[in-house]
Image (tube, rainbow, N blue to C red):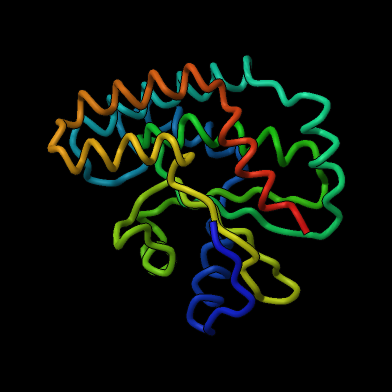
Length: 207
């Protein structure tokens, strides 16, 4: 996460352009399902692996939608935030980490009318993605907390909670294959039950 007081004009333009193509959380899930009905994914001209992972992703999202709950202490912290902000999340339907994190992000925004969640597709917004790289890579999901009144970015989050990112980086460092570290990440997400992501995201709301 980082806090930024000013951003350049090009980044502001990229943000504003992305919002014209943004989806609500419900519309994003509907988009994934409608594309899957045609054996497609959110990334055009992608191979069948993207469809496979999109199917896994939407099932995970629906499961999180049903099972993840924000506790009373967390709700109290969320409701204290009283400044209008847009949480823009770069994502794709096939992204496993997004499938775990987006439902949690959505649950948080549902608790506060001042937070407006907008989801944008990475492949349709590469200029914006390039403004918010992670270690030089186009990693998603990437949350950008944007104040449209002051034209500032008040923080970012993603692509994973820190412990999950540590698993990913260690696996990449040691040459662990994708299938293996993806399973390790899945186990971590299941065990953590969304609590680390929630704690990290709430820090974006601290004044």
